[in-house]
Length: 100
Image (cartoon, rainbow, N blue to C red; front, side):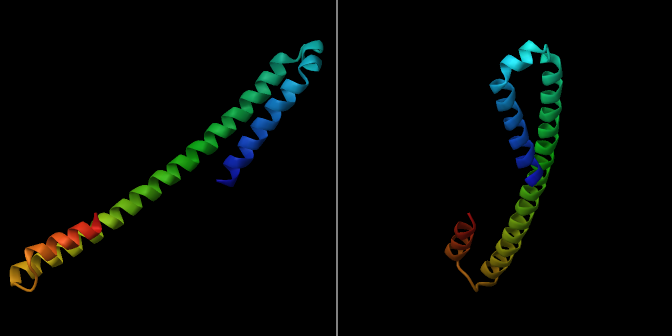
């Protein structure tokens, strides 16, 4: 994540510098050089953004699996207790409401 922030800052800094020094770039006819440098910075930003998105997706998937399996186990235990007469159907609904 820190790499992404550094890439964003570098891209923003380079863009601001290019805009502020527009006259010098234009006078020395370096538009293509500046464009290629900026494109390289954008490619780096894109690759770091993809890494961050991939890791966040994996994290969300893991959290969903853990939460869903925990809810399933607890609801199965509650359903067993309802079938044995230790809990009422209202207690089962209450447990389900707590999870949602």
